[in-house]
Length: 313
Length: 297
Image (cartoon, rainbow over all chains, first blue to last red; front, side, top):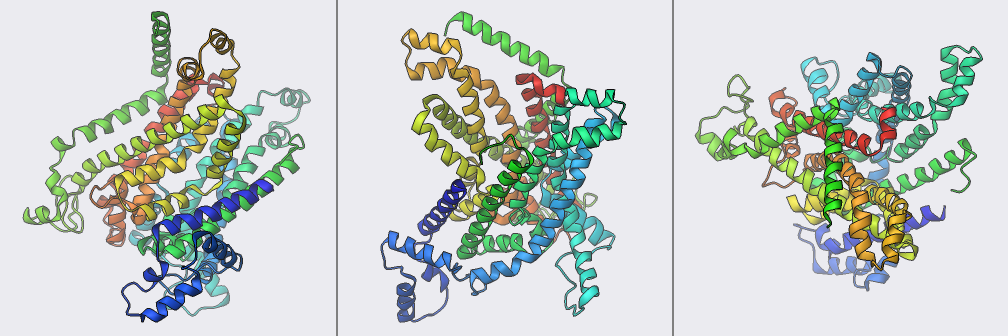
């Protein structure tokens, strides 16, 4: 708990000084290329505390951040906080769905591979997941996009709803499902491998254990031995991985969102890089870090609950 | 170094190679990697570097968006450049950045891991706090933020990857150093009057180098994939195009909508093959270093 808080403080310090180093005068960048009276600039500088020493500025930064005032985006000239919160639902929907699907499918594949070790099933699953794991996720997205959207025309080429669509209710939901399919498929395939490999190796770890021999000696069916006795003891690493990956939900799909023009935090990051829109980047980085820290804490708590042998967080 | 130690090390190298040769996945990885290293080294023989220049490409009368049928072997892009030339020359940048970033990663990770494990006490506490911080922070956003701030160059990309991906190596090396430190020969050396740096160089380092090598091989895929993603997001060096940069240009200039598969497939296949090769080699080395793993796999 204390550790998490300390990490968050580190992030704030890092975020402040990193961007301060590169960006000596944020007001000048804000008005870059526009004709603004010097008086206005000076007033703004004073109101942002830019004439104060660095430590005082850091105190201002902490105060403003605590009030969720993350500055103004260079590109849209809207508050960064508003831009970010507007993009959160799209990302949570896309990456959330993919994270759940890949965790479930990947774990099942890993269990099958371990239980049928060294059969053709194991070889197919292990090499297949390794191939998906070794390619850039956005490249997989580009291939799926060309194949299913451009050549076959089954799915739209990007966005979250059809352009100019005014549909509401069920029709809108269907439209969104139609748009989310390809990016979600891309991310699911890309994340799957990690779960399959971890589930496989942790199940193989327990497969030599005495209690499985006992369970078989009792005459239990193979499926019961697997589902009741082997899997529950092998599931811990998968739970940890799932919890940790949930922390990366917000930041997990930067390049894939860019490929599918999915209007979430990832695309916002990609757009901010092109600017470069430093206040947006700073705000996004803060949010991404905070979400990882929170989910790491939750992972520790889940571990404590699932495995009573773990005493301290 | 005494000749006895030399002999022992030579014997170890031969043993590792014999075991490696008997692993099918390891040999496949090595063959694929050798192929791409040859491709990168022989780039000047395989493709004219002038084909990368749009002015030259135009003067040669290359077609725009030429398919592999129009312009062999891999077609042309939106500004008439040969995709084959981009693939061949891009392999140099991608491999170089991947390897250089890994060297930096392993160097930082090993130094911090060895110092932390060997010195212990408060130094260990502070270094492990920093390591934990880097482990928790989302790696790609951190790399993006640093790369945006530093500017677009090959060396900056290498620096950014190195500075963001060392923590797992540091942890691994530290754990290994802690066990090696307990061994009898370290006590023996110390009682014979050896100082800290002698013990680290002659007793600790040789005993963790196998682990460091296996870890390095598995770190290359991460470095290459990170470089690819950073380049795709527009943070790559504009003057030396890696495979990731090719993917970015293909995407930005509408290769998707045009179904110009010849533009973005080769670079991605190159990345996939190299990453897979390093993964296979790394897993094999890891199994040799830690035989408990091979029973699992």
